[in-house]
Image 1 (cartoon, rainbow, N blue to C red):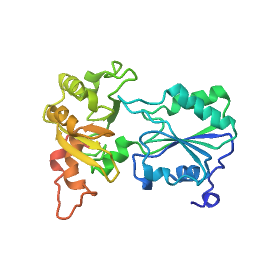
Image 2 (cartoon, helix red, strand yellow):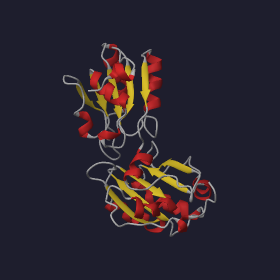
Image 3 (spheres, helix red, strand yellow):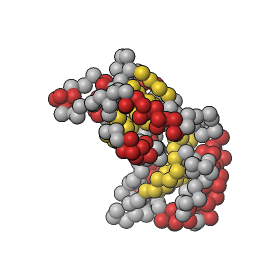
Image 4 (cartoon, rainbow, N blue to C red):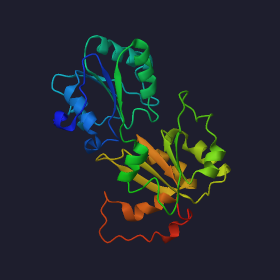
Length: 275
């Protein structure tokens, strides 16, 4: 598939596990290491957010095991997934644990890696493009822009218990982060919006929901923070939510939707001085 020797890529040894990020969906966003792993793996254990086009890149003869978790639906238990990874590695297979986005951004990559450490199994972590960056870029929304923000906050909107995370200081985020990117937040958007507004966020601040980012089914809903929760029911999953002035840039940067004749004056997007 790729010239691994020319690129100097590491060998994928039998009995090793690679925890690999597959990006937000578009196979073109795979890294060279991810393609190398797909070309060599004996066993691919993949999650629910891995695009089917990416799975078709697996080596002929490799086993494909689904290990996806989706909120509100029957899903494999994490201990069973970890046990499968370890069992395949101990059988001498090259095991590719393929995860959507980046394995260590609101995934369980670190958790699974620690289990491999405890089991004495060698592993490698291969980062992927997370949806909060790559998915928004496909929607024409940059997470930073010199005229608006010098900081961005990534937050999960769904705790392991299935509720709005209690450990998040929502008032501090509302006051201190010019741009907020929310993962897995559709179910709890009404509560999250309420907390952000209570923390001082403007009701008319631009916001957007990007569903199925970087795939042929991508959907982008642009609105305001106050009206954000009302659009949650119309949005498909998986989805990433962004709140901040950078959303206004989509009017001129929607490269995927076509830019012919479009112009955007960035002057109204002030607020960050010389950052």
